Length: 168
Ligand code: AR6
Image (cartoon, rainbow, N blue to C red; front, side, top):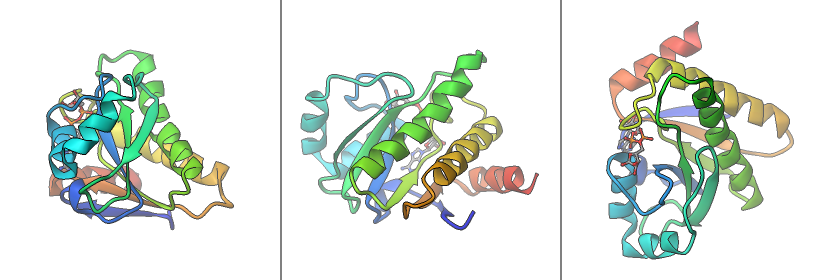
C-alpha cells in the first residue's frame, strides 16, 4: 500500500489536489463532513454546487475548493446503510468513481473521509474493508498513474478500526 497514507483529524485542513466530500444527493450541504467542508470553503462552493443539479448515490461530481487548502472538492453520495447488497456496491463505486473523476482532472493527491460512516450509518469496519478494496483495485487498474491517497480518520478510534482491517 505504497500509495496510501493515513491522517487522523479534520479533512478541511489538508493540502492535497482534491478532498472528497461525503455529500447527499442534493449536493446542497448538510451536517458532518459536508457541513465542515462547506463552512471552510465558503459560500462560493454552495453556489457552484447549485449549478450541478444533484448527484446519484455511488456517483461523483467535482467543484473548486475555494477557501480550502485543497484545489478541488469531489462530492460523492454514499448509500444510506440498510444492509442490502446494493449498499456495498454503492460504497465501492463512491471511492472508485471519485478516483476516476480525480484522474480526469489531473489530480495526483486525494483525501477521503469515511464515506457513509456517520449519519448514513454504515458499520465502520465493513466500510473500511470496502474502501480499501475499491482504492487498491483502482490503483492496480491505473498503475501507470501517479496518485497519492490519504485516508482521513476523524478520530483515533476510527484509525484503529482501519489498522485492524489492514492487519487481518
Ligand atoms: N474531517 C474528516 N472526517 C469527518 C469530519 C471532518 N471535518 N467531520 C466528520 N467526519 P458524515 P455520511 C467523519 O455523517 O455518513 C451529511 O449531513 C465522520 O466521523 O459526515 O456519508 C450529508 O449532507 C464519519 O466517519 O457522512 C449527508 O446528508 C464520516 O466523516 C449525510 O451527512 C462521514 O460522516 C452523509 O452521511
